[in-house]
Length: 206
Image 1 (cartoon, one colour):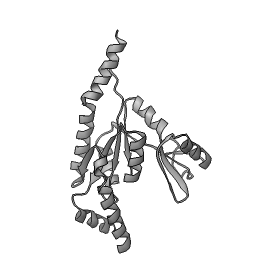
Image 2 (cartoon, helix red, strand yellow):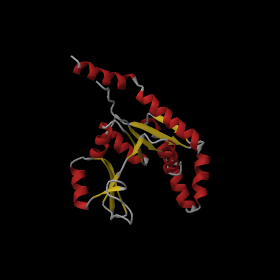
Image 3 (spheres, helix red, strand yellow):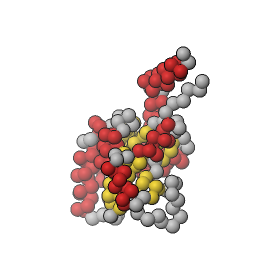
Image 4 (cartoon, helix red, strand yellow):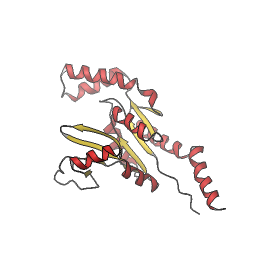
């Protein structure tokens, strides 16, 4: 009998400006075993967007019904539209043995942890607050008041580090990716995870 292991739900989050999107993009360019989590939204599809590839598109009534039924790992409303992560899609993907990767803000990660505590939570941290400020300033798109608010929010988010399983310092993109890959390998080798697979095999073999 083939031993089939369930996939991991990997949640990467961290303060604004830390480079979550950059690390995620680089990580997916390096390896293809991860499945990027497809979000659900009530906004209209843009030109070229495909249902079930870019997003799952829903009406507002459909989305609100899913909220009532607790069928979203996390959700939020931006600019009059809902966005969220559907539980059914995540579970179906994990049950096929694929690892699901979710890149999200800290507030959303805390929602996911409440709904899916068995997930693996990774906090992407800046090398220092000075470096984080430098990165936010480097965008050149925000005024001083906005930068100050972002840094204050970052301080509050860094204080939530204890809620995570791992901390990955983003001092260099390739090093950060290697650390995430090492965590994925280690999680798949955890005794509790491997033992449960063998236990089911032994029970079915009786």
